[in-house]
Length: 488
Ligand SMILES: Cc1cc2nc3c(=O)[nH]c(=O)nc-3n(C[C@H](O)[C@H](O)[C@H](O)COP(=O)(O)OP(=O)(O)OC[C@H]3O[C@@H](n4cnc5c(N)ncnc54)[C@H](O)[C@@H]3O)c2cc1C
Ligand code: SF4
Image 1 (spheres, rainbow, N blue to C red):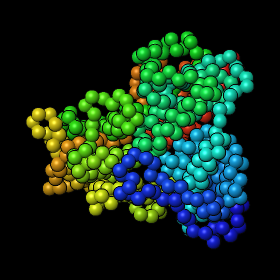
Image 2 (cartoon, rainbow, N blue to C red):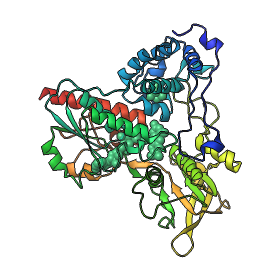
Image 3 (tube, helix red, strand yellow):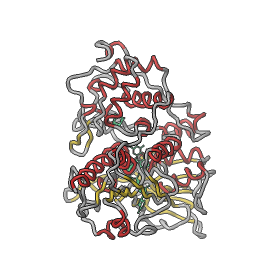
Image 4 (cartoon, rainbow, N blue to C red):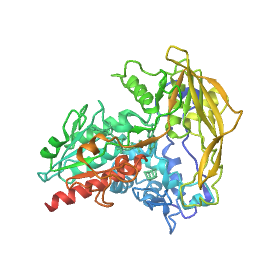
């Protein structure tokens, strides 16, 4: 334990974010870093309690308790407090292959279950993770680990998001020869084209892919399996396949006017913004927020990324619509510790909108009834209505409040309404069994699908989720696949 009385002596201190007026001028990461002694003190706040749910890693009633990867959080905190950063990294890398990603984008499920969080702000677990990883990179300690033995087995991983990368990493470390097929021009899945650069620098994603390459993983970019590369060829050429192709089907808006120019899905908008930033092949009619009134449909994290990106592109105004009610400020009685707290948060995008436009961009219990155009195929506005949730046949449904209709000017409408599941092409070509939500069905531990040599992981198996879960899924599928190959 770091310091027996640390949690009594030291308050939580976060490094915080770059000032809003400064950070909205660029796409650089907005997170700041604390000086070393201050961060060590934060490690001293860990109580090393007898019930460390922070690294429990399970799900109750759909809500996570602790870190899904089961990071050895109390041990890492203690080692950081004592200045033993390399040992802290050794513990961290026992469970986690890519802390540089989660320590920036994870919602910190661990902190939601921290025992100190019952009566004080929790330990800054995520920031400590980032500190350890950044310090190791600064010291040049993140070097290629070349496997000493090769099994002679070849595995194809389809998709290079966090699940594909973590699966490829472990399979390779276990001695298999791994090729990752990715249809995009750059690796990383939603780490690359989804999560904006200000949250996760793309140099970190490219850096990790390069390291994997140096360790022996091969990447076939701009290659769509099932289209550019027939899946049956893949099955003949490789001893096993792991599908990590994500849940990439975005939920589309279904109101009159949905086909108008300027109505764009969130991932298309965010992808285009990142391609602009990195240089490359943004599509011809690329959606840009500059000078426009932007309406973001969807109050979740993807919507927040659209708000922040629109602000950086110079939007005239940004409004974020959410059909659900505003979450409570404190945990509700049915949402006790150590479950993940379902409370209202004001994230970086909303903070920026408040600073720039003087008000929180979110409007709750509001939905789109119609999108209106200029007669020449371009969007000019959005008709919205207020709703109230009513019980009907045991189900809660949104009912329009009469007289609440409002016409709002809009030059760009970004739909961030979530994802409906994986695409059907590969699943159909392989005739794979799916679960009731259309995700690839697998055995729970081995991640083996209904076909002997095909495994699945990440959002494609679990449904739309988080980076940390995708990384865990990739590792589990790698273990399942390796066990299968070893037994042949
Ligand atoms: C905008 C946005 C922001 C997000 N922000 C966060 C966040 O801050 N924190 C967090 O924890 N989670 C976040 N998420 C969720 C998180 O990104 C996903 O849960 C995670 O990336 C899923 O990983 P994955 O590897 O399963 O799939 P993906 O990351 O979706 O990767 C799948 C890859 O497979 C490729 N592919 C698909 N089909 C084929 C094919 N036939 N052949 C070859 N390649 C193919 C795709 O091009 C893609 O690169 C966010 C999601 C979005 C959309
Ligand atoms: S990966 Fe996420 S949940 Fe796990 S310790 Fe890091 S920040 Fe916490």
